[in-house]
Image (cartoon, rainbow, N blue to C red; front, top):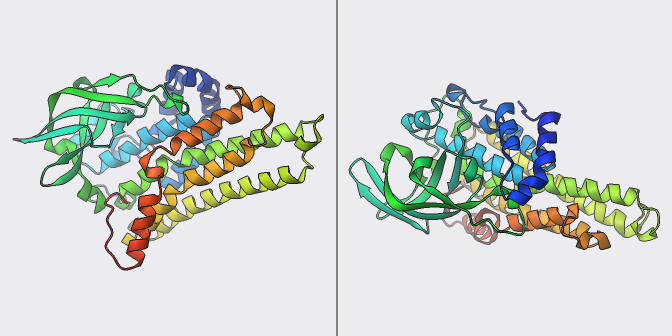
Length: 371
């Protein structure tokens, strides 16, 4: 099931520049994404969601990124949180979605700034978390923390318990509004509103749909690189249109050999990224959404390569975009910045994932629980 309509895409496209200027996605775009159901695609039907497949979701996310990568980025991140919460205690699910299935949740999983104290019935949590995309539109946040002697958990915290600090002054993906979440004073988080990393790794859940057997990390790691595929598709369209309309400079004409080679290369990059994305989820569906550890490690590595491939693609086009591309409002330059900034996300840095894959293939144990 797909959710995006031409009207919704037009709204997002029309608001892209104002979202960039305001460093936060326009409220009109968020409302449109709520009303069409995109933000409920991973939410179980029992909670008012659409419970669609990852394949349908990522097709829609790519289409969304073709009109604005920032909107696709935050919409994907917000939507995938419904998948994680669907794996949590039913009381946590009810706290968030019982009264409103369109309730939005942001996140910051980096535990570096977290302080966690174990108390009766739960935890006292405080600290600062960066990069919480779309947080200004959300009523809850999922925040990462380390419990001494146990390991990593995610803590589900209501908006009334935290502040958002406006720090998002950046050179790309400005519209994502990826600001800091701050708990200046410790707040109580009941145990049932936490999610153990080991439970996510072992795919523990109470949902009847076997899709929720999918290790939820396999959904999340694709959320933060798939938008680049859509953005690169848009860039290629812009580049081709500009070459076909050129009439005064022979080097810009469609008949130029170098132009043909560059266009072919970028088209192939897009095809490779999309083919790997969808074949991965098709393979997981065929095994009842329970891939082997070796496959999970492979998929993690493959996902981390998408941004590097898309950077290669946008650089291939931008290098010959012409003199007008030096101006800050040039559409190819905006996409160039957005794709390059996406590389900053830890999930899009392939070094550690390549080492883990190589180690597993050579007979050593997997070292990554977020696969």
